Length: 312
Image 1 (tube, rainbow, N blue to C red):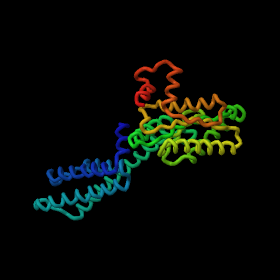
Image 2: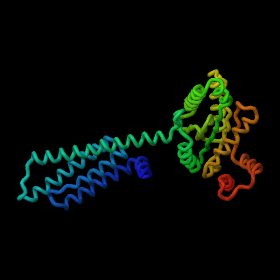
Image 3: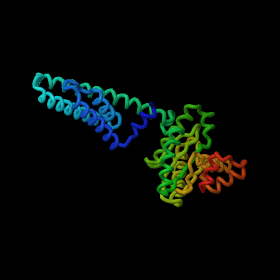
Image 4: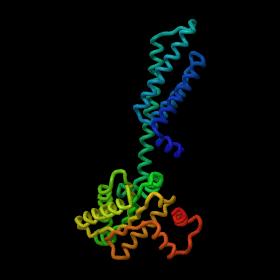
């Protein structure tokens, strides 16, 4: 049920309109072949619910109005063809108003459920402490972005960041001060990158960002710019925290399925930590993967690093 709700929420608007229109048209056709006094309010309610869930409250009310007008028109035309059934204008107006009010109530209920669903969906994707994406949401969104970059032959920058000296902040000033540092850093980082880029907290004091650029050279410049700005802002904060950052730059044909890229960027970041911290290390997938192959046993066939090497 949750998958169906997610799919409906993400459905393109044109497709939603087509489905709602098909549901309305099917209901109208059925009504024209039923008893003149029968009405398929449930069919109209389904069309209205689809529009309200996928397109919003205004679309739901519009479909409810179309459904009511169509229903009243069909009923009136059929009653005129059956003279022995008495009709009263006030009765028809009342019936139409009642149907419209019922369908609007469906809109209110569905949009309320949609709002609650969107809120839960947002909470499931957001790190509660910092307000940025959590790692699960980052993985889901990064997969589609990197797939699009591979198809369009774009370049991506995958940067893993770790806060140097964060443990000392917790030890000296308490966890509330550490939480404040994490929130401030996340807010700062989101302000440094573009709105369409991804930024997430992996866990603890480690973060990850994904940026799409035009070329390898642009990727190097962007990585240096991001680290420089974060370093400058952290230094000005006076909390004694700096940033170690590993940036993996990949051309479109170097992007492989799976999440092995994060492991490679993480390896770059730990090279910075071992070399003295508070710096940036930029790398490409091929040499890093080769170094990991030399340091660890040969990967199994289903290992993501093996998939990456096979794709290069």
